[in-house]
Amino acid sequence: MALQLQGFIELPAHAGPGGFDHAAVHGRRSLLYVAHTANDAVDVVDCARGAYLRSVAGLPTVAGVLVCEEQDLVFTSNRGENTVAMFSPDREQARVKVGVGVRPNGLAYDPADHLLLAANVGDPARPGSFTVSIVNVETRSLIADTPVAGRTRWTIFDPESRRFYVNVSDPPQIAVVDAADPARVAQVFPVPAAGPHGLDFDPASRRLFCAADAKVLVVLDARSGKVLAEREIGGVPDVVFFSATRRALYIAIGDPGVIEVFDTETLRRRETIVTEKGAHTLAFDASADKVYAFLPETHRAAVYVDGA
Image (cartoon, helix red, strand yellow):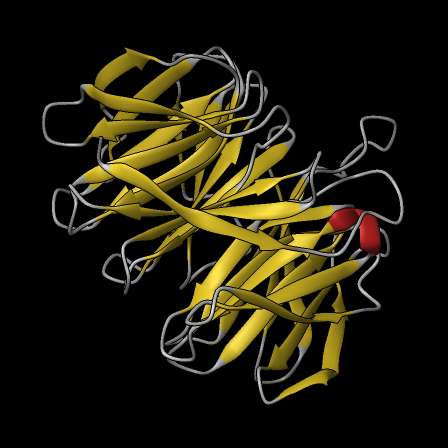
C-alpha cells in the first residue's frame, strides 16, 4: 500500500459540537493548522515532532484554514461571526479580523495582488446571501461581495491564470472569478454531478479535480470547463488534496470514514485507507509527502506517509 500509518497525534477534546474542519500545512516552518470547530480555535501541530503545540482561540465556529508560506500568513474563516482572520505564525494572538459575507467557509489567496477570497455558505432564509467575499489583505478591507448561484463549498486559486475557482453545491457548478475583476463571476463551469464539494488543481495538466456529493469525482479542463472524466467514489466526499510528486489525489470520505487515493494519470483508485467514522477532513504536507486525517471521535490526527 502507498499510504502507511506513521502514528497518531493527540489533540484537545471537543468542548462542543462540530469536530474538526479544514487544515493547512506551513511546510517551511513545519507547522500544521487545523480548524477545531468544536472549540472555536485553531490547533497548531509541530509536524517534525508529531506533537500538538497549542491552540489559537477566539475564532467562533472556525471552518477554514489556509497558509501562504510566501508571505508567512495564516488565514481562517470564522462562520460564527462572519469574519476572516489573518495572522503571522510568530504573532498568532495578534490577529486581524475583517467582516465578510454570511457563514464563510472555503478560502483561497492570490499573493501577488494580496486578495483573499472567502466562499460563503450563506443562509437559504436570507436572499442574496450566497456570495464570495474578496478581502484586500494589505488594506485589511472588504472590497467586493460577489453573488453566486448557490451555496459555496471549497475554493482554490491558480496564480498562472489569476483565477479563483469556487465550487457551488446547487446548482452544481464551478464559479470562476478573475482576480483582475473580482466583483463579478467571469465564467461558470457546469458540473454533471450533484453537490460539488472538495476541489483541487493540477497546474501542469490544467485540470480541476472536483469531488461531488453524488459520490463522483469529476475532472475538468480549467481553461474551458470541459468535463474530461468522471469516476465513482465510495461515499460523500469533503476535502481533496492533489500531490504533484506522487501524481495522487487524496479524497476524505466521512462515512464510512476512509481516504480514497486515486492515480491522477490513469484516474484509477490506488487504494482505500480506513480512518474513522466522521473523519471528513485532511491536510497534506507536500514537503514531506504526509497526509493527516482528523479523527473526530477520538480527537486526534492520524499521520500517513505516502511511500508510493
